[in-house]
Amino acid sequence: MFAGKLILSRFGAPTAKRAVGLGKLFTAKRFAFSPLVLNGVMRRSYHENVIDHYEKPRNVGSLDAKSKDVGTGLVGAPACGDVMKLQIQVNKDDNKIEKAVFKTFGCGSAIASSSYATEILHGMHLDDAMNIKNKDISEHLKLPPVKLHCSMLAEDAIKAAVKDYRKKADLAD
Amino acid sequence: MLANKRLLLKTLSARSAFFFCSIPSDKDLPMSKYHEISDHFLESLCEQFEAIDQSEIDDVILSQGVLRIDLADEKSTYIINKQSPNKQIWLSSPMSGPYRFDLDLENNKWVGKGEDCILDLLSKELSEWTGEEVEFVYENDLL
Image 1 (cartoon, rainbow over the protein chains, first blue to last red):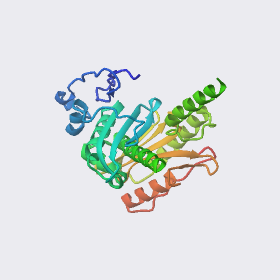
Image 2: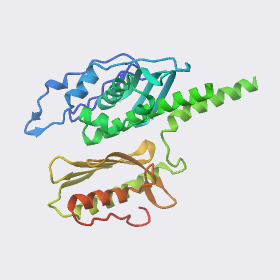
Image 3: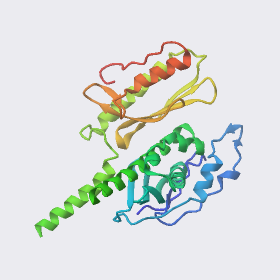
Image 4: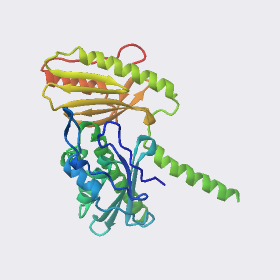
């Protein structure tokens, strides 16, 4: 559906779009070794926490969306450049998240935000999951101003997944 | 046969609604009108930021629908930009994080989820930053 295409911006800053889990993975150039100062001009660079998630994303995958134990959050739009699908598998006895997976099309910050979100969701109670703020994600990943919106999208994805699960659980009762 | 077709259409529109539900703004607003209004808005905002005391603000740059304001502490930056596919204005504040604003045509304002107007937010934060009263206003009918 989404091609695993790497688009490098003309300024050399790593604003690459990449589909994680939605097509062939494209190995990114190692921006970590690019010089931070080039010809006297400071280049922007991703924080190592973001690069870590970009190169080794955690919990990429899919759960059965039809299952009653699974909540699915699908946010964003291709036209905007970011789409995140986040799924949670919930233990109905204690309402704790047993498993969280994601698939994201977007920039490195969007991938890292959703990857980090699935990391912190493991073992969390649904109420605590609803309290996750975009600030928690952006502070951990040290996102620059222009990428704060990626963390907000991840927060939206978490809330959408929890709401979806709760809606299904209410219908089942 | 007809029932199946209805079901198919319902499913398709539901699925596409899933995507479009994240594009909440006024679908009747023509894109050209959105560009006109938002360009005007950013230009007006740029001028108002430039009018603020130079010792508090390092730089104000408006380019290709992105307004960037660097504060004097050399680490805080405001980014206010057009988000055309959504017909929105997006704000990234170093004080309070990211926001998205839709055009409220009835009241001629850009409002966020909690009905908060972008200019109220910016006025409050810049007043705190400079220590003086800063008030941003909507200029002319086009915003």
